[in-house]
Length: 196
Image 1: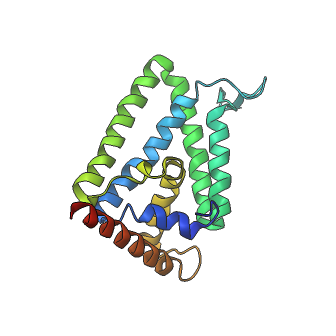
Image 2 (image 1 turned 135 degrees about the vertical axis):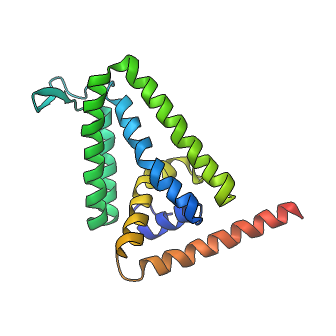
């Protein structure tokens, strides 16, 4: 699978998310997972000696691992699709700024509890979505890094497509649907062979 092939990446993730209820659950819970991961990363050491950036009179924008992950995700999303990727990059930076502000106010002793509760709720919701509605294990069991990287962009593209009919290029969704259908059929055939 090509790392920068949006169609392949989207088809892989889409093959695990075809049920509308499961997709909705992911739309609700994926970005909070990213946000709270960034919230906890606020407490990682700065990458540079003098890295806090003052914003609104507060020194909470620290160029730490949370910032580094935000930049990597943002650049990756923009490389996949300029328009939707730019929106995803913007949302990544909003999450970084918001999580940094919240982390500074909460402090580590309360922040990790908020992160733990949020992560448990969000992951439980997603596993229920896969078990009860999708009837298929999550993508992260087959490709952990790809699932973590693509999940926020996948749900954003799903939202843009369902709300505005957005396609990164003409024929994108038709091509992806064909690949998803083929992958799903292959998975069902393998599952049927195991049962028989």
